Length: 141
Image (cartoon, rainbow, N blue to C red; front, side, top):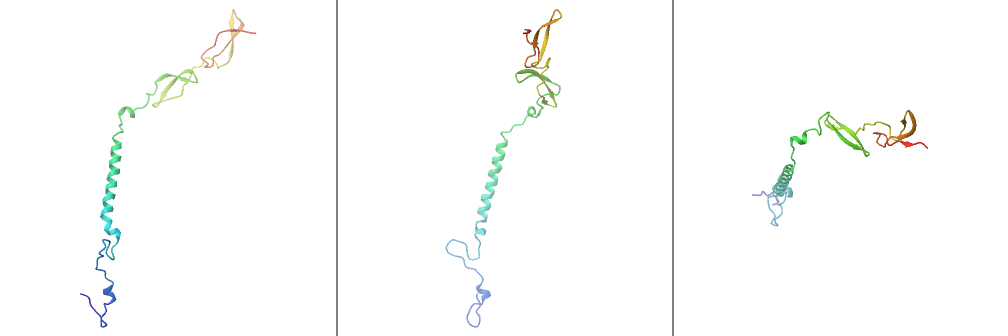
């Protein structure tokens, strides 16, 4: 029940209170839109988190880690043949990783050496591009 002052008016302290609801379906006076929609926002927020968690977990099922994939690529000390710039060589495994290709050169590529016949150097030979050996003896001009 409202109190009236001597002039028949409602005191200001009583008129400030908002107890009536609006009839338009919106928030009543003094209510915040956020307070009304908080349960709905909470529901959609939780739904979004659940969806992200589901997608993350389902994508992890495609990743398979086996003991073979964790093993080193090779065993230290192993060797194998290799090719570098068209030349054959050998590579060695060090700490599970293959090192560079090393060719066993017998001569410097493009170097010239004499061919000896009966103790005389009448022809010459040229080291091949890989340095693995000399070509045929060629006559000197």
